[in-house]
Length: 269
Image (cartoon, rainbow, N blue to C red; front, side, top):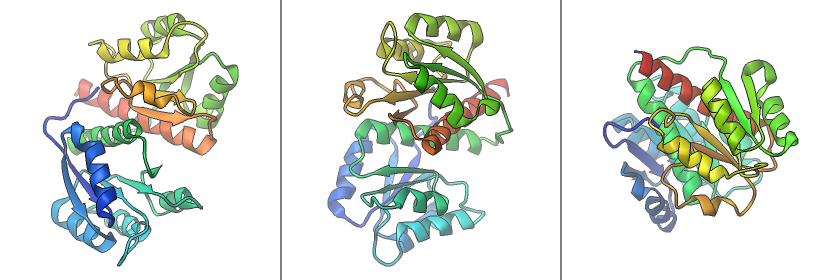
């Protein structure tokens, strides 16, 4: 996976000091620089002063809430390219409001540490690649979907759009390895439920391979399964809980397809 030439800057916008410390602890091991703001207006001032590489935005805050702050960041051409991840305990329509405000991603509090870390790392990698002057171009990604479930395999394809990508399928680890070697997919969508073999073994093999390490993996997991993956060092680029929901499946696959495309362009430059 694309490495960082130097630590990047994350602006964390959170008015609750305890939650701020919790999020800092979750992100500390990534090695990036963390700066903070206590409300939306302070966040806008920080963004305009220092141009962070990523904003993690709470929704409910005094002075200016996170939705309005996100809208302001995305409305300014000078800051619109900065990814914003909304992290909130709000439940009712918070995700829809976040995306409507221009947010690039959304997680509910308290966020699973591994899930927060992989989302942050993926957005920062995309940010680092785009800041090198690489402009994404339309591309038809090659997506390998590995799952024992025919329903899951068809859902991924239907949710993303069968005409938007070239899809490959595998039901187990051995078949997936053969598909990867034969077709060199751009994105690997890996279900924890395989017909044979182990999803963890496959993910680690890809991650540790010099030839395959830049292949982004989207992990599909059932509730309670994610903790067993947390001891691995960045085995996946993103994770999505089952049962799958079309808008989120589409968003997650598209994000990793964008990462793969940027990595390919940089490698060819």
